[in-house]
Length: 376
Picture 1 (tube, rainbow, N blue to C red):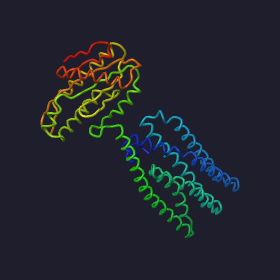
Picture 2: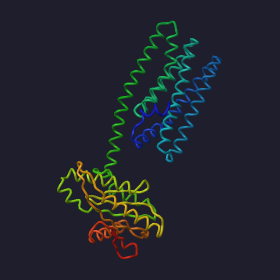
Picture 3: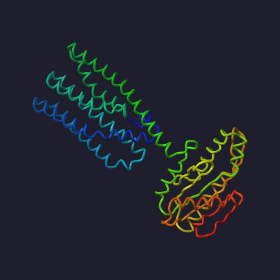
C-alpha cells in the first residue's frame, strides 16, 4: 500500500503510532500457533490427496508463515532504534505479511471447493476462521490491516462458493460477505474506543511533564533532561522584565498569550538539541550542550544574548505591539560533585544579580570561578 494511501490511516501523534505498532508486534505466540496449524493442515491435505495445487499452496503458506515470524523477531530486536519513518514502514510490513498469509489460506479454501473436497473444505475453513479470530484481537489496534487481511482471506472462498452450482454454497458465500461487513463495523468501534484511551493516557503523561499554558517542559522535565545532558552544558535562567505591568494593563488573557509567544521564541533559541522550560510565572530555563572550555563559554554567552534580544523585540497582543525585556543568569562547566539543587541555586543567584543591575542584561554564575558580572 503506497505511503500516500496509508497516511490517512496513520495516527498523527508519532508516540501513539509507535505504541500501536509495538502492540501489533506482540502477536508472536498467535502467529506461531496459526502458522504451525496451517502448515500442518495444508501439508496433510497435500499428502492425502496427492494434489499438486495443495502442494503449491502448502509451500506458499509455509513461506508466508516463516516470513511473518522472522519479521516479528526482527522488529522486537531492533525496535528501540527505529525512527518514526521506520515505524510506519514496519506497520506496512506487518500488514503485507498478514495479507499475504490470509490470501494463501484463502487459496487453500478455494482449491478445496474447486475440487469438491468436502473434508478438505472443513479443514481449510477451520484454519481460515482460526486465523480470522486471531486477527480480530488486533482489530482495535490497526483496523485497516485486519479488514484488508480478512478481505483477502475470504474473497477466494466467496468466489469459489459462488461458482459452485449448489445453492447452499452461494448462500454461504453471501454470509461471508455479511461477516466481513460486521467485522468492519466492530473494528471501527473498537479502534475508536482504544485510540481514545491511548490519547487520554498520553495527555495525562504530558501534563505531568509539561506546562499546561505554554506547552514547554516543566521543572520536572527540565531536571530529567539535565540528568542526561552530560558534563558540558550551559544553563540560562531567564526572567522577564516588565511582564507584570503588561499583565495588569492588558489582562490575564493577554498575559497568557504573551507567555506563549515568549515560549515560542525561547524554543527557537534553544534549537533542536536544546531544551526550553517554564519553571513558573515569568521564569524560564534554557539547557543546551556546549563544548568544553572557552568555546562553551562563548556559546553560552551567545545563547543568553540571543534570548535577551529576541525577548526585547515587540510582541503583538490583539494587534497591539507590546515591549518587555529579559534578564539572564548563565552557568557553564559545573563540577560533577555539584548537586542539581546547588546548580539551580547558583544560576538563580546569577539571574538575580542581573535583575539587581537593572535588567535587560546577563550575569555569570559564581560557578564559573569568577565574580558575578553583567553586560548589556
